[in-house]
Image (tube, rainbow, N blue to C red; front, side, top):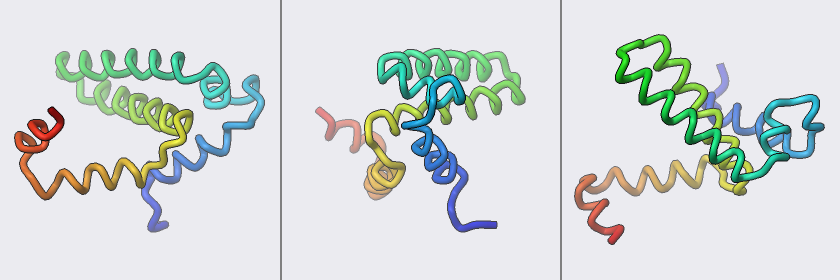
Length: 106
């Protein structure tokens, strides 16, 4: 198995679809439709993930979580954000409490 994480590999596939024909790829279609459409789809997937959790349906929660992560990666690609930037932000948060971190946001 590769040292590259699944999220990083998926992100590279998503990014490779930026210039693909929207008729040939759902990812390319989303990227072509733009950030607003992707953000709306991410919101829908968020709600579906939360509902699966509340419904205590583990299989649905796993599937919806995968959909949510996929759409988040598509939004990152559309916004020219790479996973390492998010990993760095997360890493910076591990050195202090969540309460302290939230207070620092103002």
